[in-house]
Amino acid sequence: MAQTDGMSAAPETAAAASGRAPKRRRRGRRILLIGGGVVLTLALAAGGTGLWMYRHLEGNLDTVDIDKALGEDRPAVLPTGAQDILVLGSDSRSGDNGELAGGDVGGTARSDTAMLVHIPQGRANATVVSIPRDTMVARPACTTAAGKQVPASPRVMFNSIYTTAGPACVVKTVESMTGLRMNHYVEIDFAGFKELVDAMGGVEVTTDAPIDDKYSGLHLPAGTHTLDGTQALAFVRTRHGIGDGSDLGRIGLQQKFLLSVLSQLQRKGTLSSPTKAYGVANAATKALTTDTDLGSLNGLLDFAQSMKGLQPERMKTVMLPVVADRIDHNRVVADEARAQKLWQALREDKPVPAAVAG
Image (cartoon, rainbow, N blue to C red; front, side):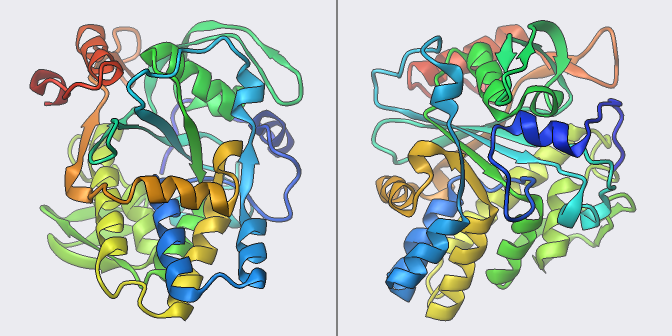
């Protein structure tokens, strides 16, 4: 997939900005949402909770201390008890991720996918707001994990923030945009995403129109398909050959795939084999980086248990309302009047107005 913003960073720069300790394995993230917790709940129930299994899965997880990085200068926790989760998929173009779905090996790391998941009190439904990667936003002043001061900027592309200042700065930017405090942070590995889909035995999706994208390598006729990991990765990355070829068309595919994954995980028999269940749990934990509160099996399982009443059909998917940027027509900016109505509805735990969601 072609990149147009010209941003780049050396691998060590991206690692320092990310806020994570040196890894035993490759990192880079992609979409999935709270499915990781759901996977673990189902897999541990099916496969048992032996000490070795527990320690192995626990050792797969990586964490970022968002609270420590941001301090107290943040929006207040919602009095309603609602939960807000920022889900990032970063597009690392090096190591094991370099050859996936048309990626190059430029060494950059970007938040290629961003979803804000709002779960009201009662945990029976959710709103998923996708933020287009090409949105021009104001970035607040941030400090990287290495202690570098990154000054505020009134105009940067959203997906460049991860590269420049790391995940905590992305959280700070989203909180500044929305007035919502992010209770949790979830980041999903690009290569790990592929392994997870393969461990599930593929994911079924239905396309309304054919997709023919030489950049992502995806070629699908219209209809229902069971995608393997390689195809699934191309599916959530593709944007050429659908809609107007912009990031906005890709967001619709990502949201569709997300709901398909969650539906399949909850389908009877998907994880009926203990061996398959463990394989899915192993792939899921390898793919995840979370905030420290979720950064253990107990944390993930407790969170997933609190969401057990949430069904995919009760998840409303919307996109941040945007308009074309007047300075650069290849970029977009928030439609502030509609965007503020969206954020206000979430802050007040009210349904998203139809005029905003449309």
